[in-house]
Image (cartoon, rainbow, N blue to C red; front, side):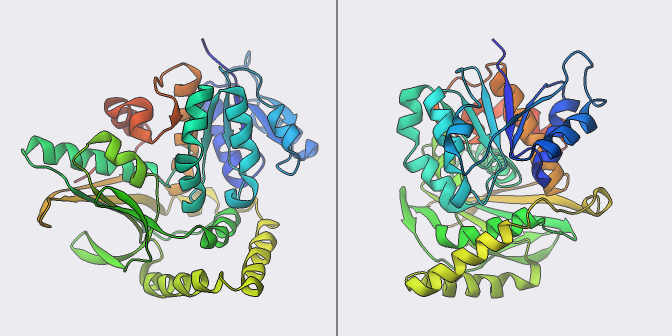
Amino acid sequence: MTGRVILFGATGFTGRLAAESMVRAGLAPVLAGRSPDALVELTGDLAGLGPVDAPPTWRLADAGDASSVRALVSSPDDVLVTTVGPFSRLGRPAVEAAIAAGCGYIDSSGEPGFVRQLFEEDDARARAAGARLLPAFGYDYVPGNLAAALAIRDAREAGRIPVVVEVGYFVRGRFVPSSGTSASALGSVTGGRFARRGGRLVDQAGAVTQFDVDGRHRDALPVGGSEVFALPRLDPGVRDVGVFLGWAGRWTRAAHAAGAVASLGLRLPGLASVIESGAAKVNGATGQGPSASSRAGSRTLAVARTRDGVGREISSVRVEGPNPYDLTAELLAWAAAMLATGRAGEVGTLGPGDAFGFDALVSGCADLGLHRVL
């Protein structure tokens, strides 16, 4: 049975891109947000992009009014897609609504703390309710999951056990962040950094590491990502997982140092309030982002490498795809269609691989232009 696809945050920057991708894919999303004028305008803009007999519709909902978000979903067949962030502040109403309805859920969050909460705290509740939660289903963190799954397969085909997996995220070309990305980046400071070591989840500041990209050593700072939870499910031999961001370029080490200082400062109530206030102010300016011509000047790049138990590299895979924002929009639309048509068998909080299976993930990403280049 095919369920409804509801897009919460449709009038934001990422939301509009996702809405366009959904309509072009033949979906008829219910566009949800807090501004009726903006929703009416968006509905009109999308009218000519999809089938005339399945136009998008709209509903009012506000993250500040949890009941309005819960009212968006009414059936286990529904799929609730949300781009409303920062997720650490505004994301919970959509998660609770999906669990209450036992339906599908997808978000565009790149905030490690929020992703961790869905895997650690919401997985059991989602399983009991029959809900399927797919957090961080965009540039953060699908490309890394894809590259890592391919690298793990390569290691196994070579007869080796991939004990350690490291994933690095980069951008080829000039990356211009949206206002929403900036807001989420501030909000994610409070989420901390985590990795998997010896099969256990650990909180760790970690060190900047380097990945070989096109013959150059590129810095990347440690974060947390869905790979930390999802990759050991794909291969029981995986014991250590680390996720790293390198799209800050030459500012990576400075950003890493600043993040460490900020994390320590959060233990001081006064400074914690200042940081959260700053996140709220930036969030008030969300909805703006790079133009199509600007986005065309950059591409997604993710690298994954595996090592054996004594640190010897076994395999390395690089994947490339469209600009991070365009890729995120296409991935949200693809995952929504997969859930709405019953393509996911598992329930609970899911990574890209265990949600749809390895083969479906590889072919689906390839159709969107995200594919292996090395």
